[in-house]
Image (cartoon, rainbow, N blue to C red; front, side, top):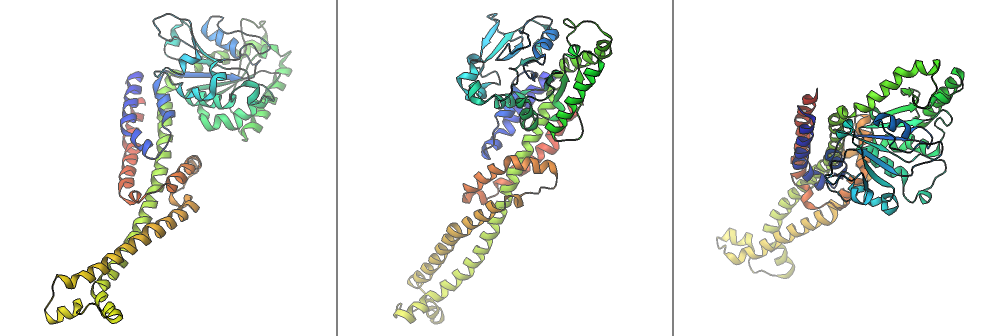
Length: 448
């Protein structure tokens, strides 16, 4: 099936089937909506001298981005064929964040300082008709939000959510020692992009004096990555250089094929698009499933309490129906004849039912008051204290998802109403399970 048609079909299906459920459980749907909106994206990040712009220029075949040893570009720049009829070569950030056809509306929240450093360059290169490259400002040491004027790492995280491939570049002289790089690898990227979407690259190896110098830099980068990722296993690290700027040497000839492999991987990003969309849908719908499951458990517990209160009300109501008259007669001498006496004598009339029915009404009212003002609030407090017990966290995957949505469950429980004790949550849970088990799997089968 054509990938663009499949993406459009997914967008329509998710919006019609799942958007009402995301809204019902107050989950943010904007991530999915943004991913479904536009073309495949490759995000290129790294410290300021890691060769990002040089690599982009080589891919495009034009000197589009400025290059240099010092910081030369402080903007997030999208490079693509934008498809605008007016032929403009550069689109400012203020236009990008206000264009509803683009996935950048949420970036408006980062403020004017970011928008002033955000732009799109229209590049007439065939492969950019079906994808976009994003060049980013170089990562620096000891940079605070105040220094940039916006939260750089938060912006980076939002772009990583949209990206189908994140290329993280290092140079041999600063192999992973930049402060912002550490935070990005340790926290930002794991929270926003899957590990399969991140490509690690050590560039500018032509600046190594000899093979020993290259091996030393590569080893340093491996060590730093193990510290930043917190894992013993080292991810694959591509080694590359800029052929237009490097002097031919025996060292570079060994890595020529790997440089070509890296370029092919970047250019094949459109092929990852639908699969990554399905992964994002899978993850976010499973988050939705956990929230709905928690509310189902709360609903079930509430109905169990309601059933107990109902049984008590039935027994107490029957007792009140027959005993209200005799008790009042014994205490006050009123009424002259109770319902039981009237039944025995066969003289029952409407006036004999007045006090018994009043007694039943009082019992029902007190039971309802007990249930709504005591039992349900007490249940809410118990559930808030033991939220993890509301769902089945039988895998590390579920535990990780739960850590992201636990706060949302907290909010929903705090606002719980009596209507939450109905069957709506169970019906919603059924819809979500059917989507994951059938409809989503059908889409996976279409791309295999």
